[in-house]
Image (tube, rainbow, N blue to C red; front, side):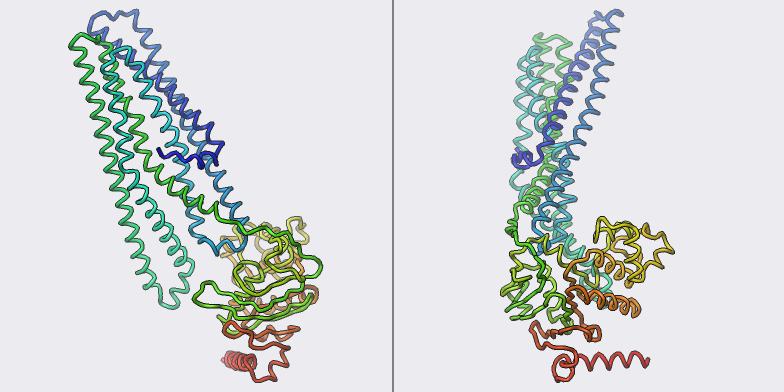
Length: 576
């Protein structure tokens, strides 16, 4: 019942903690039997006036010893549960992380980030309870009634057999709702991850929604999804409450039947008073283990639903790891390249471009023309393209991803900065860099003066570097990229949405890098592309024109029209 052999086999370390948990509970059961025996003997002796003062020390010793043992076992059981849950978290989260690394930078083509987060956090928390509570209780619940039956059969066999027969009614009632519950919890998790995805998207785009006054529509849609989730949550709770009520009825009814049987046997003289009292005291222990197992059943069902999603992620086919490495030739060539995120709309149409080693090439065009999609393809984040992308004559799909990451550096307009210190973020670019080298690169991007007025390299950054201005974030991202020192740099709108001074400083550094490295600059601002060795102009996912700035301006085409519009707009802004 609810035993997933693959799941248990995956978290092998937890087995010893589960065994330890069961052993502590079993020891506590024997201590409780001893305690109940001492209490029954004491009460029987008082009633029959056979209990003497000489018997008191024995009763006290047994009682105190049993209570100490039960306390130790309770602590030990809790400790085993904690250790089991800890091993589950470490093992499964490590497996998920390693799987994402194997899937590579294109993992989000196959699954949503929000689903990964929810499964890795709450899903594994559910499995922590499954291993720490349900599995130990499952094995203990199988052993405890049999142990009590053996003990009670020496006292009064008919009472023992009646209690034993009633025990299986609890798992039968659990099994009765299992099939329906499994389907319901599967729907619950689907709606939960869907709601989480919507919430994350709306939260990340909240500012944009406010600007375009689209927040009310998104709010309405999210309310609808939340209402669906509320309804299925209430269905889950209703199922849980109903099944708990049934189990309580069986457990307390069975205990009552055992008590009635014991009293009946006592009235017929088939068991003495001490034996009758002991059966009464222990009759509840027949059902408590199985009753607790029933309460953990819903935890187990949630754990099973979560494990299905975890194994679906872990079982995702990994792209075949290619062994080709990038050599000295880092020239990039794109031939007959087409790409679409889905079959309904093609984003790039038959693109042909060349980025020679050591060249400074700009790819320009209006927003939505496919520039950033091209950058994503060059970085290997999107795989399902047609045509060819080669680096040094080697097809991109044949390259080892680690080699691509080592030789290509990507800087976007929202490069990610991690919570921590400036030093920690910079060392990602060059782990063995000394402080002097870090300071020099910060001076190069004109950020050191500001940081030096704070805590220098130990200046703390908030999540995404939100305690820095947009220009400062980009300067720090550029400093990290310079430290990476790769042969190829791709700048994807790296100067968008920052102040003019920061843009000028960043562009000055891009020009310096272009003298030594291969630079591919994606930009909608044509002024930044003037110094490029070659400019590719994109329009609606197609390559419209190519050439140097002067040539393209002379030709009355797409570039010339964009250039004239941008110059007019800049002149208007300057006048204002």
